[in-house]
Length: 173
Image (tube, rainbow, N blue to C red; front, side, top):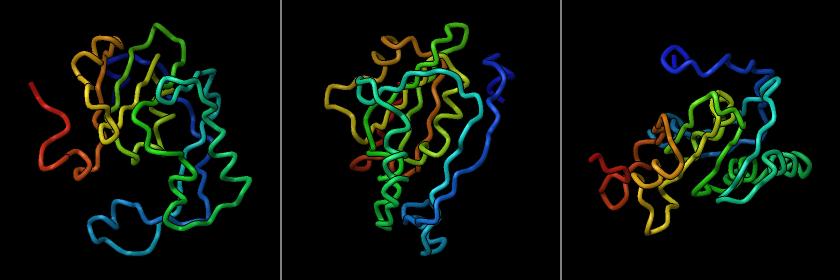
């Protein structure tokens, strides 16, 4: 659907879903009293993803390092498996695919974006993922969009995480 309007290239094929046997309890169904059993960690692995740089809070980072560490240790800590597999809830993450023919994307998101953020990012030049729950006090969204030459914005928040002290994180002006 995005490609129809923005001509951002061919989707990367998905090789397989990674489904770890360890369960976590941070799923959406649990938050709406759907059920209480844990959910498996699911991730998408892409074929021919291409070369990219990945940054966490402005520092170059090995995207696969956290997952490899998780897999090597065979963690099974129930409530924290999700964080151990995907890493912490960072304020700022960025994928840079170095393709200026494609637009730049800003995703305002919480941790529910983790399972498919690489698939989304692979369609853009730069994808910046901001978790407003961890934003610095002086963060200004309008300035951030201008500074990073954002072409498209996507909001992917579980509705409770879009609020702080009863107010929307994202002001509409």
